[in-house]
Image (cartoon, rainbow, N blue to C red; front, side, top):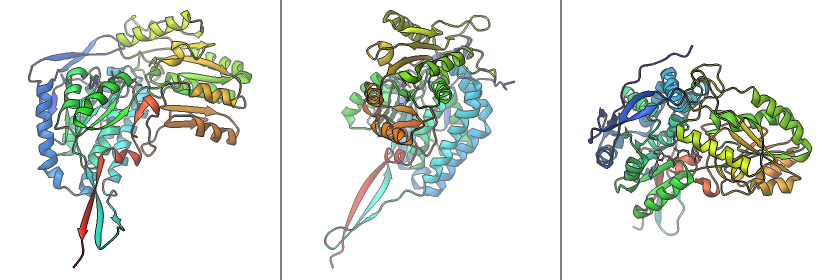
Amino acid sequence: MTPTFPVAPGQLFINGKGQDALSGETFEILNPATEAVITRCAKGDARDVDLAVAAARKAFEEGPWASMSATERGRFVHKIGELVLKHADEMAYLETIQTGKTISESRNIEIPMAADVFRYFAGWADKLHGETIPVRGNHFCYSLREPLGVVAAIPPWNFPLLLSTWKIAPALATGNVVILKPASQTPLTALRLAAICQEAGLPDGVFQVVTGPGGSVGMSLVRHAGVDKVAFTGETTTGQTVMRECANTIKKLSLELGGKSPNVVLGDADPEAAARGAQVGIFYNKGEVCAAGSRLLVEESIHDRVMETLIGRTKKLVPGDPLDPKTRLGPVASKDQLAKVMEYVESGKKEGAKLVAGGAPAKVGGGKGYFVEPTIFDGVQPSMRIAREEIFGPVLSVIAFKDLDDAIRKANETIYGLASAVWTRDVKKAHYVAKRLKAGTVWVNTYNIYDPAASFGGYKMSGFGRELGMHALEQYTEVKTVWVDLNL
Ligand code: NAD
């Protein structure tokens, strides 16, 4: 049995305190598995953002955070990770009821990884430093590595807590302060994290949460002259808007955007393993994964064997109650998402792709909830919409290829470049393909694995900047060069 927890109405978390939005307005948070209202949260706007930015600036410039040693800062970040684990059952429950992801994914994978992200970056806090530089003349030259200031973290709704930690942990570890604006559909774990930061004793104003719509709260943060950096994850089109707005204040910006990742199966691959990898690649978190292996590219010689196993496995993947620990596929996250997925299914049929599994909404329990059958289209042509556009749901497009060069050409035939995979028993081919794929991550004989130490991010229209790993630290620090005249 999954433990359940009461969910209070959500307030903004500003300067160490919960408070209502200045407008007094609230909005509903829905459970996509039942369509029931879970609770209501404060609907912030530009005025609440002003308050949060003022508190953040004060905390950054004058508060105890500003004068704290790097080691002590690291201890706070570590403590937050420990507390996320201590409250993991509750965090997992909240994540599942607001997103529809299965409790097995949230409790066993995502919440523990969120804790690990804090603990990983905590270790970096006192290991980052400047350098002395051997310059010309009688000068002493050194560099300082300094925090940027106020960071606005804007994550999407598919991994609400985990993708927030990818921003918050490195930002805090390097001495910044953070204002988190969770996706409007999924603020519950963000608000619980605010309470955890309080429990950890984090000084007021260092971590704040402003809930509300992207177009008002998100946009106000992006435009605000008191915000130094925006760390954004979301759709490519929203990222383009954010980037344009950031130009006005030349804000630092990192963008993690959409994907249409190729999962390439070469003729010599283990067909069972590749089929398993294809399934994990597209159906983990109901395909609502930026790095989902949504294009399965299969060499003609092995196509039928891989497809037979994959279709067999997919037919056994039955959507169900995401709070049941045995369920492996929950509902998509919202009514809009369901409509979008079904629209793509229709477009696939119309453009002549062959539907070989799923293709319809699924009925679970009493018939409520946004459930979709896991869906596979075979015989997909690269020109079809289902091969080019991000569906962000449990829909796989299978494309056949002739040889290695054909595979690489088709794999790279996309505006995106977030992730990719290759399945082969030939070590030379594996590295040949890994080098040629234009994507920020290449998995070889595996899919969808992550680690706080391994950087993640996009090529092309999947964004820029890297999260996780040591490269994330560059996104949250400035390098200052100091020259000292030593001439007597
Ligand atoms: P979205 O772009 O609609 O929203 C992302 C966030 O931006 C939300 O918090 C939203 O409220 C906010 N927002 C919306 N409009 C805004 C504006 N004008 N100004 C500032 N903020 C604004 O994306 P989504 O639907 O929440 O998430 C799905 C998308 O995210 C998919 O495209 C997916 O590929 C992408 N994604 C990318 C990664 C990655 O690491 N590259 C990871 C997960 C999801």
